[in-house]
Amino acid sequence: MRMVWIVAVVVVLAAAVGQAAIGGISIGAGAPQQGPTPNTLTAQEAREGWKLLWDGKTTVGWRGAKLDRFPAGGWEIRGGVLSVVESGGGEAAAGGDIVTVDQYGSFELTLDYRITKGANSGIKYFVDTNLNKGEGSSIGCEFQILDDDVHPDAKAGVNGNRKNAGLYDLIPPQNVRFNGVGEWNQARIVVRGQHVEHWLNGSKTVEYERGTQMWRALVDHSKYVVWPRFGEAARGHILLQDHGNRVSFRSIKIRELK
Image 1 (cartoon, one colour):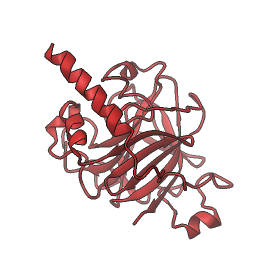
Image 2: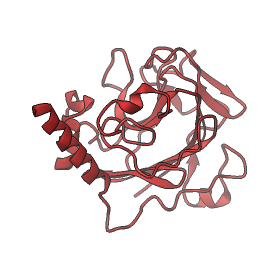
Image 3: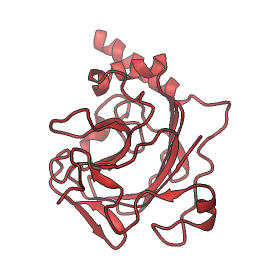
Image 4: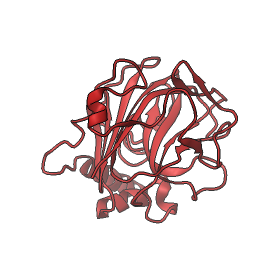
């Protein structure tokens, strides 16, 4: 009976947090349109303060989450695409996760991602690389990337809170517009102070407020309960996850918000 009550509380809290809004205004509506070619900025984007977080060619600006350099293996750069190399599905067991050298607080991030059948990955933010020095992925809030139709994680968790475009293990996604396996999809993460939104292909899938009583209740009933004040840091690294499946990224762009 206690487990049933906990699950019910988490479902209600996830729905409430996921529906939170700031004055009814969507803060994610100003994201850039795709440039004329991948990994480039339009003149308008440059004027609006966007910059490329990955240059499309090198590893500049990135390092291994548990390294002081970019991983020697496990990742591939080819034809303007950054990819996790298939290694059997282990979490950060091959090349390992990669993170930005810089840290970010309030920001808007967009990137294109493409998954293979059954793939699992994620985009994490507010990552503290000093946590979890052992095996597994570094710790942070996660925009889940997943083949919901094939990967078993889609049926794990509570009420779908491990599905594609959700906040992993915390809030299930809504209004998901997924272009499909093998196709490019645009993820967008918007953080303005404590307010956070996830977007997929122009559709808002998650919205929440960090640091609130509801937020902490969600964390208390998740895998993150072991990390004090999870998700409440003022700044952190942005991470691309190596979960052992081939997942590709391009056109990684960011602008810092005031």
